[in-house]
Image 1 (cartoon, rainbow, N blue to C red):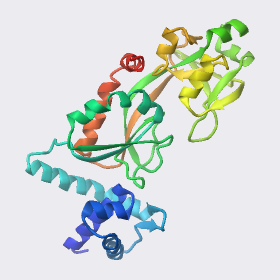
Image 2: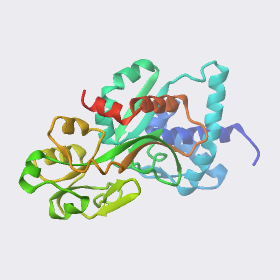
Image 3: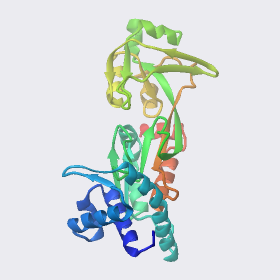
Image 4: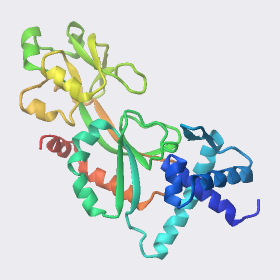
Length: 310
């Protein structure tokens, strides 16, 4: 296929549509009319011979062929952008719009307290933090990256681990006074527990206890399941049952005596926090800057827990 400038122009319009999420916002960003954006996409689809976008009056998403095309051309466009910035002496400039898919708990606990400082450091940046319970489709939803707890998806993404935080099994002092202390994780069978819903499956997270090489899975009895961490901690503090919580965000409850860690001698069950990116070879300076800033915030579990108590 011979090169022509119209092909590159069409690809640029497609990238703008994917990143903006709608043709209307893409048109505003490019200084075009919405019909002009639509015609450019149609010409590009005719040029490459496949349909790249499924679009209705309400939704717009990449087709499977469109996703593969986007993943192939994205690194090249990033390279062109980085070359232009480097030529202008601004390769490290953090600017433009950064759209991040964020775990709601992490956003409330850590990011919200520090956003003023980050924006002050990067005055040419527009930051959009969108709280989601699931990672979804970063490309179709126009996200530059995501911050999620748990193991990242295997296909179509690259990931960087930022943190491992301990999982604590806790209860209110009043609950333990009424129902007795537990000597071993298997004793949970005789107690009321609070389940936390896995947003990916809709089922409760499994409970597992680790101490060195020893692993004890437990299927705990539960009459209550929640999908919000703060609700779970609040119910646990009121004596509704025993819960498993991340050390991140709960150490202040333990330190104040509102909750008691039941099995401190089983310390090795942990939960990771990842920065997740679409599969591109290059990352913009704004993505790198935000990732490094988050890494500084979560420099260790102790620092995070200290942030939670401020």
